[in-house]
Image 1: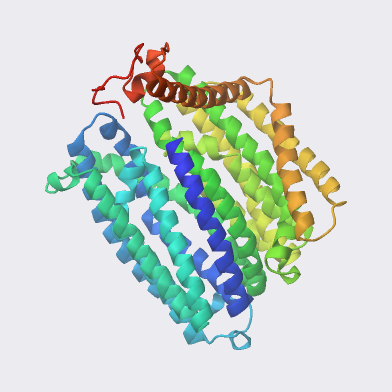
Image 2 (image 1 turned 90 degrees about the horizontal axis):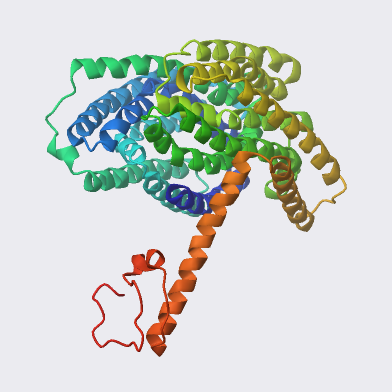
Length: 551
């Protein structure tokens, strides 16, 4: 709860400033620069394959020593991780430099027709590359903070730095109207962000310095590399599905379409960041849970978390299809819109990935990296082949739907099979039926809601009304459909417990304050009052010397 609440509040503030920054960026620099921004971000995500999945592998290896307070093992893992990240930074830098002579081939338009030269394009790429390389310096200490169930600290630092960065970028864009200033600020933010987290981790985990000279055994390194080999393939599949779409749209459709697509993806990414806060907040807890052998309890927790991911699957599909184009019209301009078929494809692609979140969270927490090593190769091969092939037929819509087909046909069935066979050790049929029900509900509710929204006029005021209606309608219908499930009843009971405890505590504090002021007798529940240091307030009561622990 702490990780989730802190993360969401900070991200919400960061999100508002990010949208303002993107609006000003497009108005001052134009859609071509926006396309470059999306393109280079995707290229460098591909180069980040050099990370190979070490962060996930180290996080998994840290769960046990952190739980058992084995400081020496945790320190040795982190020192090894630091060494690996320095090597990765060098590899990414060299690979990025090798890409520089070929940048013009990633843009379908003639470079002479654009508002910047080829040399400028190369300098922009170098600055993006510097930012990526800097992201590996000192960044390894993020992992131990997150693995120790303190991801709210990382969220707070990230969000504060993002807000400051975006404000600086807005000011510099207005003052200089220069893309270079925008990129240099981005590099400075990355360095400061990582430095702050490095200092926080050093203070919270002082034993990292204490065991600086100790080294991991060859056996432990070998075990890590076995996981890394499988994780590299998983990262490969993830990069192909999530990080090459803008590259293919730029190369086979147009840079303008790549810029438009980046606006839609910015919205999806920011909403996804909100949802990821929930799943990132519980991933370390799931890892702790999965260290035990109670498979029945693990399955119960799995169904509870699946209920949340299924809610987001339905909720976001409805909201994206109904609100995407109206929001972008108000935010930017009608010239930035895609047709409804492309909007549905983007929404469907996002929905498919939300429905996978719980399965992948449990797979990562259980260390099931090697059992489906072949999946990302199949997913990547089929996805990129379909995306390029369909781009000739349907343009941007074809690129997006090609990736979505690969995910539905390859990734989802294999991921579920591996988790249930090797992790939860039970039949997956019940979960698959729930997934099918969630998908049917998503499509049915989206069609109904979109039809109703066609009667709502255009305009900012009407959009606010439409937004409130869509959000409430999607949420209420989902909860009505699922209100008989054990998972729904669990969350209702949990909410009653949390809010009931909160209001009881407030009431008790009010009674205590009244009793201390008037000297009247009250009978208090010791369990409710023990946090304040009072077990009772005595009759005839103001004591001249109250106990020291009473605030």
